[in-house]
Length: 381
Ligand code: 13P
Ligand code: SF4
Image (cartoon, rainbow, N blue to C red; front, side, top):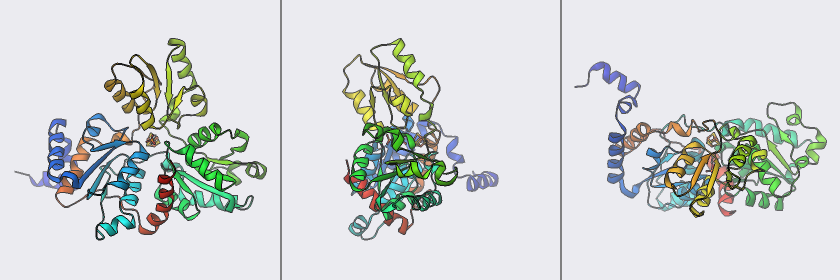
C-alpha cells in the first residue's frame, strides 16, 4: 500500500519510483510500451547515447540522419528523442510541418525529450538577442544583404528562425562543406554560428584563409572585438562558440599516438580545434566516423576523437580492429548522458497512459521561419 508520504514524494518527484528500479526491469517495461504502441511510437537515438538507451532506439543516427528520419516517418504518432534539446526542437518542426499536419488531419506528433535538462552547452553560447545585435552592428560596416547567416544545427530554434528570415540555412557536421559552398555561391560572406571550429575547419578546407575569418566574440567590444577593416575583408565570420567535449582533444594527443604507432589512423569530429583536425587522417560527423570504421579492413588501428560513449561502442562492436580513445581524459557529453533508462521509462509510460511529459513544442511563428532554413539544410547534401 502506498503511504501518504510516498504518495507526496511521487507527486513532487515523479521520477523517484523509477530510480529504484534496476536496468533489467526498466528495459522490460520500456519494451512493453514499444510492443503495445508498435509503429505509432518512434524512439530516435543519437550516437552519443548510453548503450542501454541506444539499444532501445528504433533508429539511431547523427544529427543530419535523425533530422531526415523525423521528417520522413509517416507512420509514427509520437517521437521520443534520446538526444539533446535542439535535436528534439528540430524533430518537432520537421515532423509537424504544414504538409505533414495536413496529411494527419491536423494531428500533431508530440516530440518528447526524456530529460528536459539535456541541453547542449555549445548551443547555449549563441542567443538570439546576441545574434540580432551582431547582425545590426555588422550592418554598419558591410552590406548584410550580401551576408548569409548559417547556423550549425546545434542551436536554438530561434536561431534557425533567424536564418530562415534572412534567406539563410542550417548545417550539420555531415553537410557543412556543401552548405558553405551553397552559401558562398549566393552571397559574398557568411556569418557562421555557434561553433567556430566547425566553421573554421570547413572554410579552411575550402581554401579560405584565416585572415578572412574574424572571430566574433558576443561578450567582446564593438564589432565582436574586430576592426571594421577585418570585417570588410572577411569571407566567413565565426561566432566564438565551441563544444566543451571536443575542445578536450589536443594536438599533443595525436602526436602521442603517432609516436606509439606510426601506422595509426587518427579520426576526429570537425568540432575539434583546427590544430587537431590538421593532424588527423580523416574528419567526419558521428555517422561518417562509424562508416569509416565499419568499412576499414580488420586489423586497422585507430585513435578516435569524439564523445566517449560512441568510441567505446565502436570498440565493442569492432573487436577485429584496434580502437583507442584519442584523449587521456574522459571526454563525455554530460547532457547526452542525462537520458537514462529511468527517464526513458518514465517518458514512454506516461505517453502510453495518455499523459505525455516533457513535450518539446516550438511556437508556430518560430517553427515556420526555422522550417525555411531546415528545408534548405535537407536539400543541400
Ligand atoms: P553529429 O552531427 O555528428 O551528430 O554531431 C552532433 C554533436 O552534437 C557533436 O557534438
Ligand atoms: Fe553539444 Fe558538445 Fe554535447 Fe555535442 S558533444 S551535444 S556539441 S555539448
